[in-house]
Image (cartoon, rainbow over all chains, first blue to last red):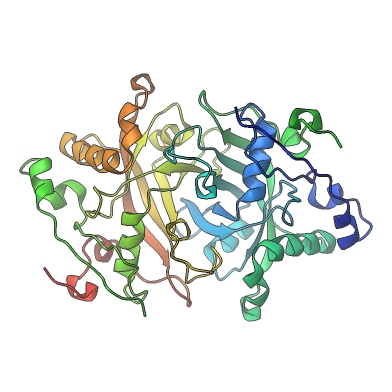
Length: 210
Length: 210
């Protein structure tokens, strides 16, 4: 099976975002998983997919299209590089339908694939061993100033051009409050993975306890 | 602006799928656009995104998750290589929630990005000049045998491993019947593009008439 998992507890974010406890800001336990985890470790697989990907498809209920599910390509970040929190943050404008939809109906999901990471080898993008994850929950405007600051640090560190996006477009920070996790990272159907296991993975299962 | 558009009318598919008129099978006009079109040509941009991509996110209304919009990574094909029809076909099993959802509520959308094609240069995936498209409509099981045959040829020619997927999983051909098109391929908001313009683009606008 796949090997070598690195786990790094991050403390300097506490400095960046002030004295507030980091988990109370971003909710998820900070960690870094650089190498594809063993697929038996669902939490590690899921967190790896989120921390290494830079974009995905954010789904909302369309107010313009009779309640249809509306997917939209967006950039995201769950933390600064190597310090993923597991929570996807977005930088959206209501000039785009996704933010408008969410402000009327928070139900949403966010989907990312392993395929663009280049680690699927010759596998087809739909092959279960080429991982994919869909986080379902509520897409919310981040109105807490500390969390918004953490989110902007997370987003701008992975998407440098965002800082320069037009002020007049009024980009705002949103996040997905996760309620359900659909993870496929091997054959045999979706892996059972609770939100708590995802946000606070057992460090022993990651093979490295700090 | 971007240059060189090649358009090829395809006739041998008529042979492959029998004597039925090709447009009546796949609905869309067959064409091939290998090079990124001028973003002013919305139809060409949209068809290029569909014909060159191999995967995207297919969104349905979740029956398991209280009607939430549920995105899922899937492989697709809109035709054999260089012969895109514009209609995305999928190979799905009801072991997966997406097909189950669609059989209960056909409302769906399908989202693809230019980013994985590698033609966005240094642009962020959310930058409007890095194209993205969302086709909204109804996700339907393809029960016409001629169209299903065309779809399988289209899918298997781009996804060779599909042929060997487990028979017991009962994979079936689905397609998105497109009702609305959301295309971003440049600055200035979504491009107006009707389904008819998308399925039957003006060849003169593609710069090459066969």
